[in-house]
Structures are given as C-alpha cells and as structure tokens.
Image (cartoon, rainbow, N blue to C red; front, side, top):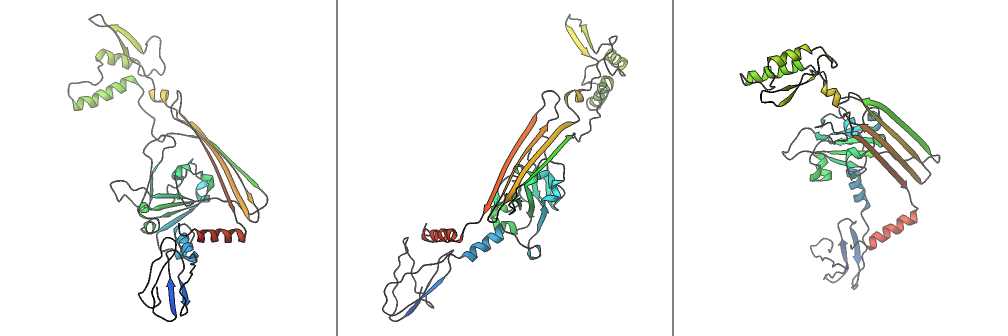
Length: 359
C-alpha cells in the first residue's frame, strides 16, 4: 500500500504485484501475516521494486511462551496449579493418574473398576457437559495419555483449570489442560546412572468378612426373600435340610461322619445331590495379597552443546484371581536428546524457510 492512503495491491502466488501511483517519490508499506512490516521509499521514475520481508520471530516466540513455555507464577492471570515430580514420586502407585489424587484442588480422579492398568476418569471442577468433560493432556507439548508416562520421568505437572486453557489451546481444551513436563539431561560430561526398585503387595479395599456357614447363609437369604414374597423360599431347603446344615454349622473342614454333599433318591427315583458345606468361596477364588513390583533405570548426561536422558521401566502386577491369575507386564522406554547447532546452520535454515515461505 502507498503510505497514508488506501491505494494498494495484493501479490500473486509468485510474489509479483502491480500498483499505479501518482508521479513523484512515494513510500510503500508491505505486510504479510507472520512477517514484519516493511517500508520502502521509491524515488520518482523508478518502475521496479523488490521487497523482502523478514519473519516476525518475536510474534512466534510470544505464541510459544503463552502456549507451551514457562512463566513466573506471580505473572499468571489464570487458575493454574503446579505439582513437582518429587512430590508424587514417593507415592505408592504405578501410574501418574492415581498419584495426582489429592494433590491438585478441583482435580477429580475416579476409577470405575479394579481392572489392572484401567484408565481413570479425570475431571476438573465438575462436569459441564452431558457428553463428558475430559481435560486435554499434553506431554512435552504433544497430546498423550497419562497412563503412558513413567512416574519416575516426571519433572513437573501443571493443571490449567479456567477458560485460559481454551483461549490458548482451542475448543479441545474447554474442560481444562494438564501439562506434563518430563525430565531432560544435564550438561555434565560424566554420565549418571540411576536405579530404583519397589516390591510389595496390594490388597483389595472391600471387606472380605463374608458369611461362610451354610446354615446362616440359607437362613438369611430366605428370611429376606420371605419379607418380599411371603410364603416363598429362594433356596429350596426344607426343615430336614436346615437340621443337616445346623449339625455342620461349626465344621470348618468336612467331617467324614457329616459329609458336605449328600446324595438322595426322590420319590420318582431320581438321584439328587444336596450341599451342606461351609466353604469360604470368596477366598477359594480370590487372594488377599497380590505381589507387585516396579523397576526403573535411567542414564543422563551430556556435554557443552548436547544432553540426553534415557530411561526404561518394568511394571509387573498380579491380579486378584487365585487360579490362573491375570498378570500385567508393562514396559516403557523413553529417550530425550537436546542439542544446539552452530550459528551458520541456524542462519542457513532460516534463509531456507524464507525462500520457501510461499508454501
């Protein structure tokens, strides 16, 4: 555009343009989204002008800082809670999601089942939609899953709770954002190897003090059933059967004189078996203590212009079933390399981007 006027033109795909101006010297202003505005003075009589725009690096840096960078807490205008990795690593858990329980105000984490490696439901400040309200999870700037992060690799976790999350990350972040920053290497030339291991047992939280005696089990069930359907029995035990159950009420193991399974013949000549046992079926199927272990190994180091962080973990959990128990083996491997290139490489790369800016 001619400076101070509305007389202007738009370039074609090759950057060519034509503009009719009054006679005499003029000043032109050239602008493009993502580039710094340029002003060019054209003397009278000159018919051809070449203009090269420079990338607006300041604008790009501001976007990165607001979106994925760091900022002092005193400068924050939104509701953000930060948790350091050291604060959650001492918690006895095999995934980052359950480690965050109770660490962030307004962050609700619920588990709907006891299935191993089951992803928990995460909600920030309550549900605001009938279609669910899962926050956006970013791991080192890329969308991911908290269950895929090794707790030993976490450097810090930030939870953005208010509308500032959607303002920066778009509509996908309408229900909040969880930012996970993983550990990186250091510039120490000497490599450092760290190992941590954990062994233990996990137990179900539900009460397992169930009724195991046949007499009281039948009596209680039929008592409740009779209150709902008077005169009917859910378990078809007659008075003689109840006496047989009462005779065995204190038998922890089967007494040969009082077998737990009795065979009898009906009036029609059919063979029928009746069970009078006191077996603890819960503990016959499920165990109270299930072994777990987690092994972690990491190597970190680097030099003046290069640093690296390599980590691996093995997490093993055994399920609650006694016979043919389900076993979870989870392996994780992560590598992070960072380095700085020489100035001439950076300048050549920037020049290449300027040449290809039409794409």
